[in-house]
Amino acid sequence: MRLDIVTIFPEYLEPLNVSLVGKARARGDLDVRVHDLRAWTHDRHHTVDDTPYGGGPGMVMKPDPWGEALDAVLESGTAEGGAEGPGQPVQPVLVVPTPSGRPFTQELAVELSGKPWLVFTPARYEGIDRRVIDEYAERLDVREVSIGDYVLAGGEAPVLVMVEAVARLLPGVLGNAESHRDDSFAPGAMADLLEGPVYTKPPEWRGRDIPEVLVSGHHGKIARWRRDQALARTTAHRPDLIGRCGPEAFDKHDRATLEELGWRQGTDGRFWLSGEAVEE
Ligand code: JD2
Image (cartoon, rainbow, N blue to C red; front, side, top):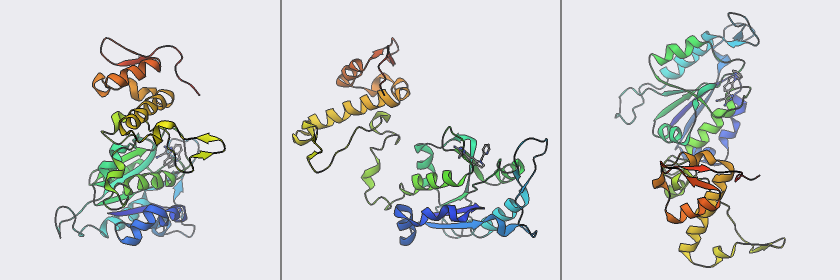
């Protein structure tokens, strides 16, 4: 997979040299190219921003540097050949981080991990002149995405987040293809519950033991205990995930556990939280 990132802060993307993504690059499984947007400015001050039309606070990124940068990046890769076969023109998916984008989810990470080429445009200031997105949306698959409901100062941290989420799904990158099936939020994972606690050696630490069941060797009981822990944690931190599940997501023991956690089943089979069951 090829990734291009255009930014005024190339050094912000240094973490892409480390750990899972860094190793995937070193192996040649990932071709990451970081570009300095200011290379496509032509004035003495390498200006990338200007005041907003209509007034208001802050600055907006000028369309010209972005247009020249994106044209150059697209030009550099449109004859590489991908899933369509060798020599076929490959077009990237353009991923635009913005607080007003659609939520970046595990489902989108899975979809993007199947693409041969992604181009990211992390902006600063109040974002990029709208005409740039409209222009490339006529030629490319453009995804405006947000990594969560909080306001950052720019798109570089979201790019680090998204690249890590996508890269760990690439064949060979995690080392173990099985390892991501149970992820919280993986589509079709354990009914989309949060994961419960995990433990390792030593068996006693600062007077704290491991839950007995985990050393019992009883695989059925262990699976059931983990499921109950997942239901409890999801009730405490993300009750919305349980509320949105249909009744078929839960077996008889699940229903008993949910009832103990304060859930009641409505006439439509969905669960709702009665009273004050959420702790912490
Ligand atoms: C960004 C800014 C417009 C306010 C480029 C913020 C984001 N989940 C997320 N929160 N914030 C961002 C994000 C992404 C790109 C930019 N800013 C600052 N722009 C209004 C603040 C500029 C994502 N993804």
